[in-house]
Amino acid sequence: MGGGTEHFFDLITYFSNPLKTTHRIFEIVKNDTLDGSLLIALLLLFFIFGIWQVHKRKGGYKFAVVNVGLFAGTFLLMASSQKTWAMHHVILAVPFLLLALFYMLSVIPKSKIVTIFMLVFLALNLHLYYSINKAPISPHSHPSLVKINEYLNGHYSHNYIFVVVDWGMYYLKGLYGNKNQSVLFPEYFSQSNVVELKQVQAKTRRKLMFIGRDDSLATKAVIEKNFYTIECKFPFDTGLWKVWRQP
Image 1 (tube, rainbow, N blue to C red):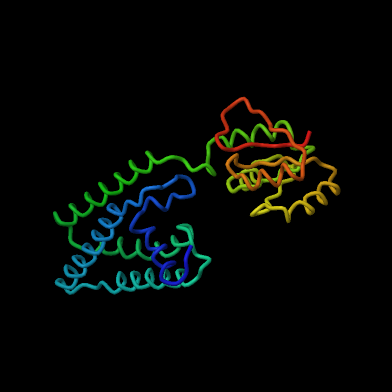
Image 2: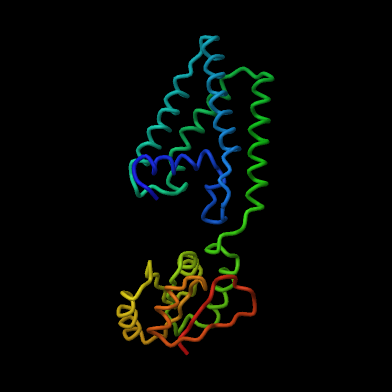
């Protein structure tokens, strides 16, 4: 993630390429901005048309304009922070845009133009839905994580410390594990975590079980250098996810 202008445009791409908003679940490798650009253009045209229609009938559109302003202001406020990086941050600005949209729909006289707008809006969203279902699932959201968690719950919770060394398993294990389990997530796992892990192990008298991805070579090197472990075998496919435990 860059800084300044680069960071601002990184966040803008969540609107110009809506598929990017699913990055926690899917791997979006194609920078396809057509659908997003069409949606942005469609909304702009709709608001311009709506304000013109309401103004022509001497109606009020201040509520819509204020909410569009609040949307822009909230987005700019969040974009000013480098800690804002994902759609689940940017989404906080979107309710203002929805309030403006639904208000305009309620005050604009029904016409063929409004119907066409709704149909095009629906078609673009259906195309996005179709596109996302063709995208590959991200490794850190692999369906096997649920099965791995259930398997570990039934076999190892009482005498192991689960050390999650890659993003994707910690919250799942913490929320849906057994009450007697112990789960650690040393973010950016490295050699600096080894002494602390051994101290926790000595205090709890539990063995260590590492849960991570097979393609995290640096992490695997740290584990192999400092701990004697064996790889757990599962009766199902685990994708890139592997589990190494102390015997």
